[in-house]
Image 1 (cartoon, one colour):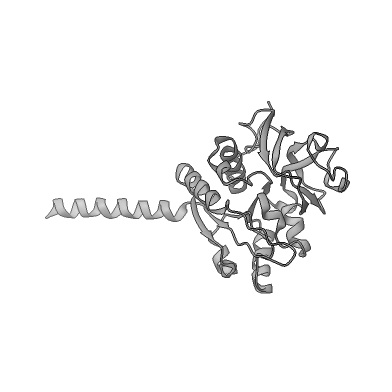
Image 2 (image 1 turned 90 degrees about the horizontal axis):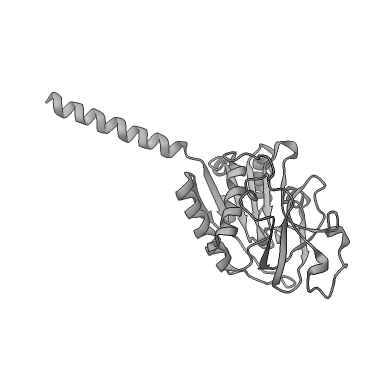
Length: 261
């Protein structure tokens, strides 16, 4: 009888410990809502690939991952469950009500982590708070093509494993209303792009280059954005996966910036 009681006690302690570890895990929400308008109707086919990739990252790095495309997840009570919100190629209106926008704004202002991937800057372009939070609003891109991406800050966890420059096939995003506090991580040279409209948006450049990935830390924020990732196949590429993982871990507070190479 004592032996049974002993093993029952051990089993209870192990179950309790396991539950505590599960409860204590950090959690991210990958949000993928895309809506169409008369002037902006493109729908990306990369969102499921991004969700699958981030789920894999979570399983391998100890954070839980939820995914949603329903804006009703944006309530103050629900957002308290998450350490980081990831907007993956969201498009046009991310929210349906002012209450949802208020929940998002409160989450950011309270120091919640935020990650934007690829088309996330095509989201809520009429809402200044969102544009400022993510760092800018998308205005255009030249045709999908190969171009050279250059690392301008190799100390960040999202760029630490990247080569100093690399050829990449993607849409090179130009943004307007750039947040003056954004810190560039990756850039491209606009002169090297096949771009019939070259020079049309000079305000999209920083030191003559197109910013493609950045962070914003003012006001206690931890915001990471990367424009890379148009093609769904790219999310299984170790280069992009490692770049995104570094950004997510940094937003979670689990990866620190170090010295540049």
